[in-house]
Length: 151
Length: 302
Image 1: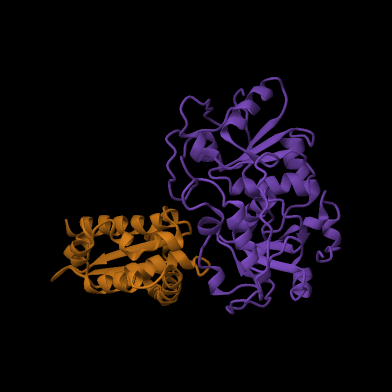
Image 2: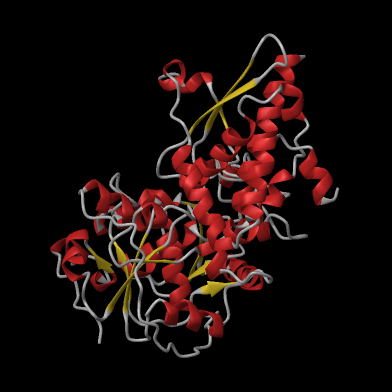
């Protein structure tokens, strides 16, 4: 898949993030990720004390919990909720990319995001491929939950 | 010139008390001219969220490893890494980081491969510094670059390759030498192919190197991230596991990071001589053709 066709399949906010990341050098990519990590919204009250109702993304290097809700009507908008500790800014940054890029998007559009979209962020060099696996796993777990919600 | 030794009495019992500094010693000596403080974390962004004033960042993954070959950086690259951080050959380097100094000891081990003379660990690491409410800053230090010599890496004294481990196994058959597996019990038994809650790094076989003692690395640390006392460490490694100071010991884990922590404990705190870290570790051994593997909770025969 070439880059332009994969970008066309991305929801607009996610496509914009990919452009932001790929438009700067590795050091600035880290800075962007750090800023995003600070923007990850806190959990709403209904999840705040209910980590056990969330799914743990074991592939991340630090504890990350994820909850996915799909609106019952209309275009089945997807809502995403993440919990990761402040001492795990990279994991928070990855979660924030998912939240900024996918929260509120229709289920079908979330499912259409290519599994390897994150390679276009150009983070492999700045963060290392190993650490990026957490992002791939996050997307695959989100999709799995969306798929079962719309089935 | 090296920075002064921390005379903290709690360190006196260790074999090499000069290899540790306390948070209060560091706070007092931060401005010392002969000292560099290096933060090395698992999380590549953690330093940027706030670090000890004056500390420089060193990333284990993107900076200490060669980008192409599975190996550490070469002497030229190492000299560059140090020089641009203001680290001269004579500089005292204090390492600290997250997760009980796991990555800090890894960085220290790599510095020792290049024979950097004065390397120390901040006991308790990042967590203890923060727990004590000490100062953090996001201000990036601007060290004056210095010339660091090009020094050949010594891959013999404290590093073991797969071939060395195979030869070590032969020696163990005649009762000479020991192996320490510092991974979690599930990885040791073969039930798990990676750390609980960690990414799978691609080992096709589970288990441990036959004859290896199982001592998960974090047993050497207290709740607050400091190292356990010498008596406690001795009770674990010597009394319980039967390791002896005179043994040639090889430590391994998954990629050689957690075992750097154990290598530090055995070498610097308990005074073992001849401890090597097998950095190929399980991601090499668990993928190698026809190497012996033991499964289950028992050590098995070397």
